[in-house]
Image (cartoon, rainbow, N blue to C red; front, side, top):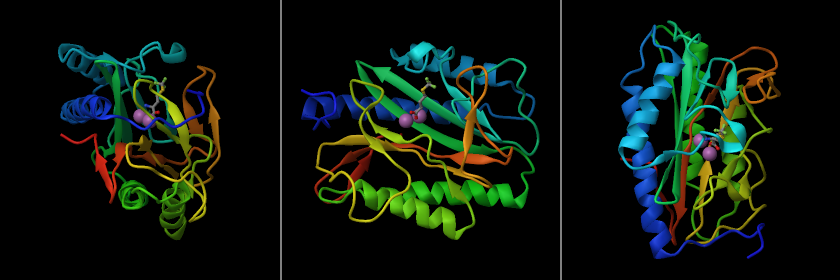
Length: 253
Ligand code: MF3
Ligand code: CO
Ligand code: CO
């Protein structure tokens, strides 16, 4: 099969993806239970790593194109791909995205949420709430016969009508035996345009929504993507199976 083709998963694949998605969701909730002021992102990484390996899975980010840790921890103005570190300590008023990807029996489950720490200012709270709404409303577009443009358009409309912007430099992705497969899932677009969805496709939607400019830059570590204006960014992600009349969220417990 050409690498550009979108794989339609069979029942064996779907069973494997359900198990991987469930484990990713369990891991995310497990790590989130340890979130508190004063904990370092390195400690969160260790908690995730131990949970994933104890359940017979592998943390897919670790060594992925050289990524050095087991999860991504993206705080405040970090858009995505934040690298856990002992010197990064969670503070009152932070927002932090935890992005977990597990590989279980060869299959990947990928999910993230942004958490509020202590007394977060109202504008930033609103950003996080709207970003989750962008994900959950766009998921309602997913069914056999709809298009990826329908997904992107809903995200763009909700973000922009609230005065926020959509990151364009990173997107969602097909997922299965590979961490990142076709198609690319853009978080902006036009209704009726783009790839037509078919039952059996599995992909992520993972909108990154910014308070200020949509533009990003990558730090000298080669990974950490930040907003160019230092304003906050939020993200939520689920792995989804397209079905005849809707979709199944695979990354729930
Ligand atoms: N989990 C991220 C995603 O949603 C990808 C992380 S790649 C890494 O696609 F190398 F940074 F881990
Ligand atoms: Co993803
Ligand atoms: Co992810």
